[in-house]
Length: 548
Ligand code: SF4
Image 1 (cartoon, rainbow, N blue to C red):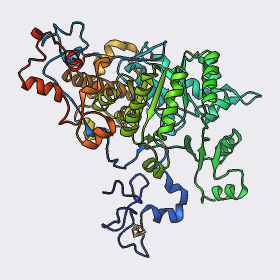
Image 2: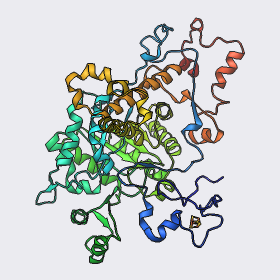
Image 3: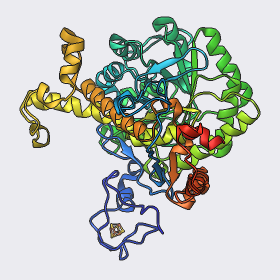
Image 4: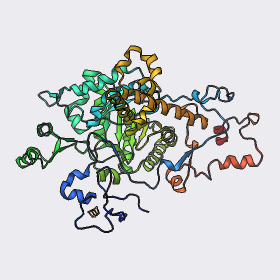
């Protein structure tokens, strides 16, 4: 079975001329000399490296299209007819108290100084891509009013057109970074936080010192990688002067804008854009521990790390070094990531897919725990978009996983809300929205709730932020339903026993029991006549039964 047909995708604006395509190569069964378009090989014949990237840049986010052999859809959630784990008095709970709105979706992360979130999700790293910059107000205020953490991605200072550096090449003033932090803080109300990510260039620019000294930021995130790609962050630049400036600031800019022939080609329109790339990191234990110590000494309360879909060895490094460094959160991002700009072939073809990577992470955590080593709080990432995924991730990685990092799915409501705002302004409301009404009050189900809370401040909440809040409410309620159905009224009571593998392959990878094997011990006892869950035999909860 072929897992992905390459050489043509809407992400690169390419297609096959023929209906019949060779599965492995993606080349038309009969490739015509004279074809007018256009697969990736066809387009790359004259646009070359441009075809590496999904587009149009700044207007889309892209997610890989490879169909991995096993993913989270191979798990289902168990439902039970008895139990109410996590309620104050589990044993005496009944239909009147064990109601689904009573399920508590609040979570927290941190080694000692905890951060609480109202829902166990937070944003992917929104960094220097145009899509993050353009939508920031919506994303930031939305995350703040939803009570979730917002991750400001790498290179924000580095690409700030108004960046001022001091004599040592360190950030003296970055209005863009200031805007990002201040926007979130305007509506922050004690749940979630804004944290800033640092890569090689950010470290060189002294971003940590800047956000700490100027903004008293409490958390900084080190970045090893992400699920979308195994090279650093990239953006496209469409002005020569800007490309030259970024090159001067130390970035890798391709093609090299300082070369006269490149400048001529750009001016004549042959080259339409430049790419700005970050550098590859080089991780070693001593250097990592020293950097964490340096950041703590600077004054950060929390240090977090994001690692990508690297090999199992790098995952082991992240967990072991992270435990020694007493990290406050470790985000493990599996392939395929979603992105504002990553090379399309790399997105599809590199890295350990989420289900496998997260299964390995659990195995490694257990090994560390057996050595009596405390594992940092974990967040899982890599393709989650709904509450079912959140439940499964928390259950799969229980008790280590505290939250899910959601990339593209949390950006959508920000963009949708923003667009509704502009459609309402220009009279271009599409039918898909207009069927709910023609005013903000009619369109957004959470409008009145927010109005009651924010009153006159409502005018400062953009509709993209309302979109994120509304989306988070859907995740929260959907999660409450799944929690209640699996009789978990707190996130901390969700366990691996609340999942089943639908395929034997998924069971082998994850060690989550195959559907036909789950609860077999209990089944045999019940069939033999034992009333396992009845309080009269003293075994009142499913976990007591499991351990008996
Ligand atoms: S060049 Fe044209 S005919 Fe040949 S594989 Fe590509 S789309 Fe098909």
